[in-house]
Amino acid sequence: MKALTSEDLELEYVFGQSQHNEQSNENPSFIAHTMSGGLKAYLQLMRMKNVALAAITVPLGAQFAIGGSWIESQLTEVILQMLAVIFFIGAGNTMNDIKDIEIDRDAHPNRPLAANLISIDAANIFVKLLWILSISCLVIGVFLLNESKASFFELIAIYLIAVTLMMTYDHGPKYKNKGLIGNISISIMVGAVILYGAASVGSLWNSLVWWIAGVVFFTNLAREIIKDCQDIEADKGSRDTLPMNIGLLKSRMTAYVIIMASLVCLYIPYWQGPFHLNQIIFQTPAILMLITLNRELAIGEDYKASSKIRIAMLLGLLGFILPMYV
Image (cartoon, rainbow, N blue to C red; front, side, top):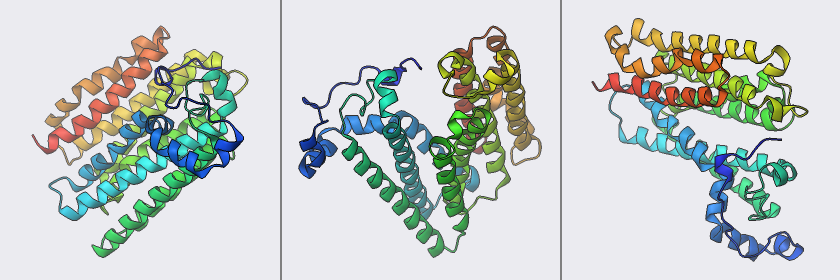
């Protein structure tokens, strides 16, 4: 059983009464009240911190694809797809909490559903609303791309792939519990947000976008493996992870090799273009953080290593942006 995370702590009661009773579950006015009065709880349910980090990756993907100044229509398209991603991830996180409510009552009792801040009926309505909003943003974006004579098939394809990966990760085959397959699935979803941003402006087939998506994919995959090393005791009996099969040492070594693959993807845009080789200096902080991970991994400081990878990912994205303007 996993320990509480920092985002689970200090969630205040939004309502002064329990919402698990027959009257509250059947009364539409009560649900309407919770939807408006419990905004903080609904934002917590969506995991807004993670949602916001994913959402800002959409304009980054668009910027990497465009490479210059934007026109007004592109700005509109990117904002729409940012919203599509926000609602998409929010719906996925809410569905996961609905499915795991009984587990969360013990493992994460401060989450909105487990803490009775939101009823199951209201959460189900919220999921439907989020899906409607996300798909609506996608459809409007497709219409705008078609109006501007840009390709929209890639945008639809990435969205459908993301839906499939999300459903098989938490539901259906539940790849989340199958170790490396789940690690790869979630990492594809993370990297796909960069591609989705490029597709939102009809420019998916820019080589820079794919190399950056590769960096994001490999660094996130390494981070997922390291997180499984960190959680090996908590995961026993519920998941079949890579560290359980090959051991902690070999898993950490595997993660470090994957980090080296991310550095290859990071280097190629400076070697083959569109950037100049001397501009790789902007990537120095990210590169140093990644190549020195062997120190934390050698002594088993998995949490510190995982945190360093997240920071390095953000620094790496910044390192790709700066050469465009300097």
